[in-house]
Length: 252
Image (tube, rainbow, N blue to C red; front, top):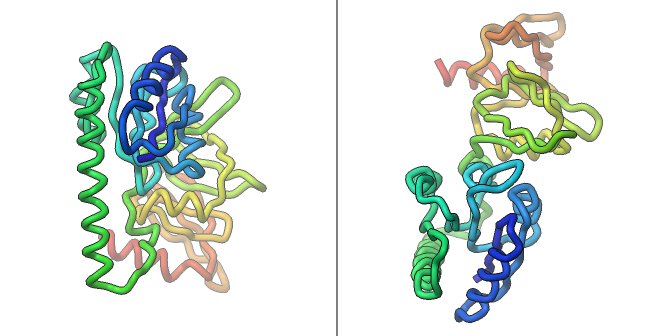
């Protein structure tokens, strides 16, 4: 099992590392000092389990859990505050370790994680036996509900529901919301894979949330604009027009 410890306090990380080292089946242990660093490590480290503190600077552990890319690792929250328990399980945590915990309590959480991982492997093996191997399309994976956007003062949390449309700007993308236009260093195609089917590309440099479209304005040669409920106008190219019209029809 590959485990990522996420806690802003060094003594807490050291304690967990010592206790994990005494447990069988723990292949690799890595540490992140906060939620932002944890999310940056996920693509390369690919942990099976996050041991995640809740109260951390910039973004909370609950925000991290809501921002995990699919397929997401299992999450066990580790905190000194029991008032977060309900919200933790709403975030699909498999366990909730209340500080101070002991070795036996950690063992129960690890056993629960092993059982979940074993069940997932069994289901995957059964599925592979019934069908030829294929890669799960990104559109079939659960979509994220919020994005973490670094800025000069820290990290901004942007709810996906609040994003009306998206456009590219050199090596960045601009998220157009009612509260501003934060920038992310991300490709448009990569972000659309995370956001799921509620967004559709309407131009080589733009995408829109389908529910935000109020009407289509036609131009010559098949191009046009999408008029949003907010009053914004988003470019619509002939290349993507048929897909956009079909998606709007599916939503009605």
